[in-house]
Length: 212
Ligand code: GTP
Ligand code: MG
Image: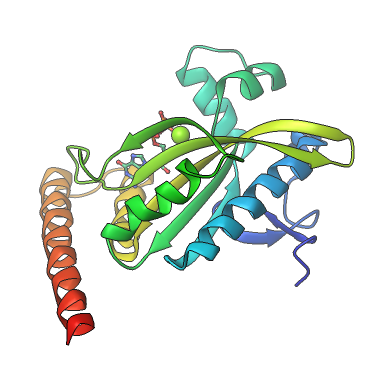
């Protein structure tokens, strides 16, 4: 598939214009190419590091844009979205080992082409529910057919096991009337901690294998 044709929505690689709704297409307009360029540059930089197992990308759906603006007490408009939401373009970088997360982030931190706008370290400080991931918003000036544009994208860096935990936990948010929800939430937290503990053992095993 040509990378020019590869376009993204909903954390899955899809092809535009066939899969992105017409509402999204008209909302994002010419900014889509700027988002695609920054997403491509993020993936290129990450893949060059050698730490990436796989990547996922998405452009925020219109429903999510509306929900997030409303959560922030802002009316839905293109201007409000572009001025206040830094995750309209999103990239997940999935690596094998937990100690590769910081190394991956440093690839962006040390690259003068990327400005680090903010970071949230849920690895050092996991969320109370057990969520672990490193988030950063980066800004980059990109050349588009209509001129230079400065755009932001949110990068989430996590391991395979953190990603699979987050996918399962995410389903909870959309499922109503779950039987024994409190027990499931508490067991999920326990799983997150046990999975992280196994990640530490796996890193030790990797080092032992590499040294022998
Ligand atoms: P929101 O995007 O509205 O959550 O606000 P934010 O950008 O200030 O929050 P944050 O950077 O903490 O999280 C943004 C994204 O991280 C979310 O859209 C999810 O993709 C992911 N995320 C954050 N917390 C959780 C969590 O507890 N569980 C799961 N599954 N994903 C999370
Ligand atoms: Mg966000």
